[in-house]
Each structure stands twice: as C-alpha cells, then as structure tokens.
Image 1 (spheres, rainbow, N blue to C red):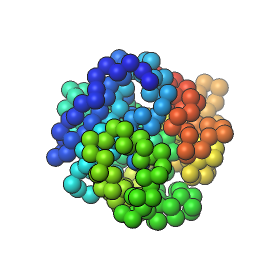
Image 2 (tube, helix red, strand yellow):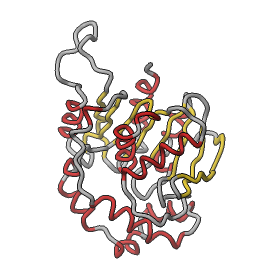
Image 3 (cartoon, rainbow, N blue to C red):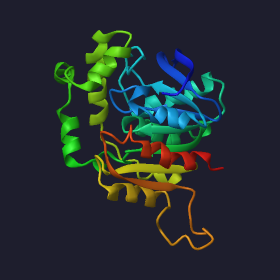
Length: 267
C-alpha cells in the first residue's frame, strides 16, 4: 500500500463519525469500498491510484474503522456523508471512485451532490437493483441479523476484526448492510441527468451481466454512434470491461487502476 500521508482519522459528519486515511499527493480522489469492507479492500490499487493523486480512503457508515452508527444505512444518506466530508476536508470538489456498495454511494453523489463531484468511476455498480444477477439478489435477500455469526468465518470478518474500534459491533454492520441491499431502486431516470464525466468498470464475469453495463453506458449517451476519425461522436463517458475478472477480485485486480488512471487524468 502507498505511503500513508494522514490517517486513520475521524471526521464528524451528519451526526456520525467516519474514518478516513490519505495516501499520496495531488488532485483528490475519494475511494469508497464495497459492503463489509474498508479502504484495504482495494489492495494494491490504493498505491497504484495514489501514485498520481491524493487518495482519500473512507470507511463508510459502520464499516472498518468507522464506529457503528445508530441509524439506517441508505445509499442516499451515505452520499450526503461523503459530500459533507469533502467540505470538512476543505475541498471544493473531488473525483469519486466506488466499488459495489461504495459504487452505489458514488452514483448517488453524482445524482444528488454534483456540486462536490469532479468525476465518477463506478466499479461493479448497477443503476438499478434488478441489474444484479438473480443469484446475487437471492444472496442479498438471504442476509439478515442471523447471518452475522456465520459470516464470522469469512475473510470479510477477519478484515473487520483487524481494524474495527469495537469488534462486537459486527452484528450491527451485518444488519445495516442487509437492510440496505434489500431496498429496491431504479435510478435510470436520473442517470441521463448526470453532468459529470462517468467511467463504468465491470468484470466480464462480474455479479451483473456486461449487457447491464452497456445499458448503463447508453443511458449516459455512450455507445449510440460511431465516434468518427476525429472523435466528434465520442462522449466524455467511458466503459471498460475487464477480462477474466469477477465481482470478488475486480477490486484488487491491477487492471482496475490501469483502466481508471487515464480517465482520472483527463481534463
């Protein structure tokens, strides 16, 4: 992992405490992990991204080093949390990169808080709950308070145990995430209104079909015509399908940072 410039630290936003760490220097990039994770979920991609930017890795509500919060977990609320964190850190705007659950938070930021968003990288992120494969949805539906003990046998709990301020709060995290991922949503009407550049990144063996990412891209105005020799028909949005990558390793695949870095450098 890249040299830590600052962290871990806590910021009080919207009535809860969020933990964050800073890696590298340069233009700010907020990094949002997936469900049950922390910034460490991105593995070597943290260092790769921080080679040219100031990466601010945030542990979302009740996750990782962030103390368990006494409130429902919703994508919209967490988006407001990150927007307030950006202001608290004295930043005007920042690029946002989110994976899975963190991608949904990032997408909501683009929809409801474009004032603080410079650009978005959405990794394994559907624009509607029904975008996930049926087996993924079945797994989400099966989650609940009763699965907390079973999940203590997984690497997700081991990672949580190493950084959480109160390991005994694990059942709170499991219950909050379980409730959040059961909420139905469809943001297709709001996606075309996004005013910031968006990059969609998906694995070809991800938790949703590549066709969903293509549909998402088309909602943004991409993939509708030939770009032409002069790129006149190209939008400012991007789509990357990473070969041989699943939902369970795209976050640590070196191909992720390699794909996102040129987009992050665009003006």
